[in-house]
Image (tube, rainbow, N blue to C red; front, top):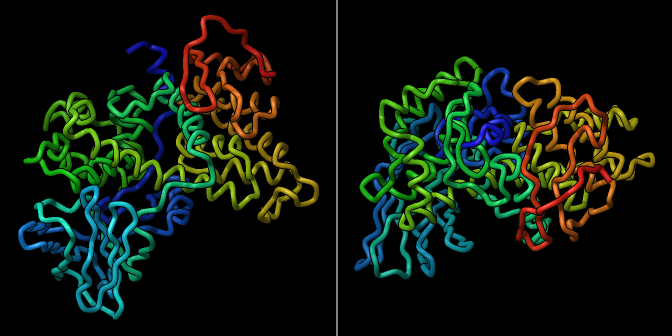
Length: 438
């Protein structure tokens, strides 16, 4: 690893709270900014606490069985059960009191009548599909209104075209991994006080989102079926409990190191063609839930419609885990101190003006934080694209711009490698370039 890559990675981790990712996320511990905002955007998805004790599908009998235990402190009153099935398989039977829908490979069963599952009690759920081959249901998730449950799997955000999203994610990947290619296999301790930093979005073992990926992966694939990361759950849980109780990032990796070679096992989970699809899927799901969908929803709320603004919001969510500080500052600077939404179109506020103030506030936050200062250039690219008017990301994007090029020489140079990202998401490394904010 180059020293410069390590510097870029310093901006990679957010502070999040985890309780049981199979279920999903809880509220944040004290000092963990933005968690309530993120959870609100996720409709408090699947916040019940539970454990799945049986997960079988008998192909010859076309019959599946899921047994889950309510490990929370209150009763479930109308649970929803969601899980994935193999590609091409259709869920086709509703037991009494249940109805189902299917989107792609995800089957979601909801109640037509009330059903109480008391705290500490277990419930046996049956289903059937068109498959005559046995399998294990993937990514089992239980939600319930009593737990604040909502949708269990948000659909991929559709407010950007596929190519616009590729460009947005490729840009952020430069800041996270110094390459536009999403680095699913990446794992390293960059000594930023957040444990191991991992994967396509800089999921950290000490801030609450790496454990989400591992729990999702554990529900898709067991240790006996090639999951090298399942053995780390006790260590991850210990670290996360300490994070929750203190509200402080956790630097320690000792609990993981005692269980194996974390970096090697994380990388192997993606590099192994047998396990790659499941591991990649879990990283993608956590990004969608925690960062991409919330960023799109925030853009909608404030009246921003361009792919550029959504890309800038997404990057800020990945970097900070919240947009509230930047949005509030942008509104205040533009005379919308009441924080009335939508802001764009109100009293002459334009999208360009809003994005400009948003970026300037984020620039200041990065520059004034010692762990983020050397990543300040990641804001400059969005400012350059704003000045160029590349709102639809329909012309090639180059990160040949530094904060000092846009706002003055006091800003340090981050040293990101200059890449060119084409409108279809393909990219190259230019042989020559000139730094400029225009």
